[in-house]
Image (cartoon, rainbow, N blue to C red; front, side):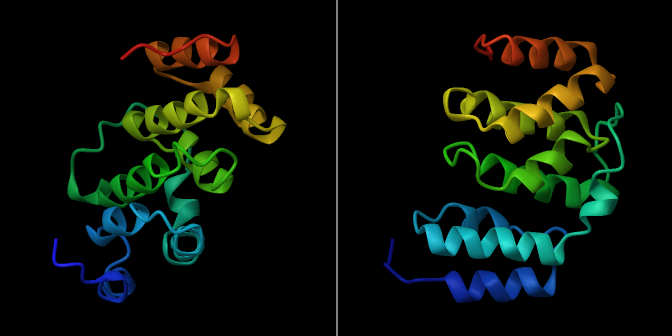
Length: 151
């Protein structure tokens, strides 16, 4: 509104509290591809990706211990209109124990469907047979079959 670039402020906030900073949301809203790539590199460096991709489960993720999963979801949602970008984060999200994070990754892959790389499709092919949430698994099969998701 005031045309002030708060980029550096948000970067500092993320460095101080990477697991649950609301600044991730602000940073993924950028239209600048270079800045967006910087955000993804920060996520790769600062977030405990091994801890996030422990395997699909049926966690609701509604307690503070899952805040970092919400951070991952914010980042993954930012990839919807960037086909092929951030595949590692999509992969981690597909292996999250939190159902809504995996659904977010599926929405990204569905949005990329026409432009999906073989690597992106392979992530979904690997995730579908081990998905414990039957509704989500069915939606994964739809995307793999070239069908659109309905909200």
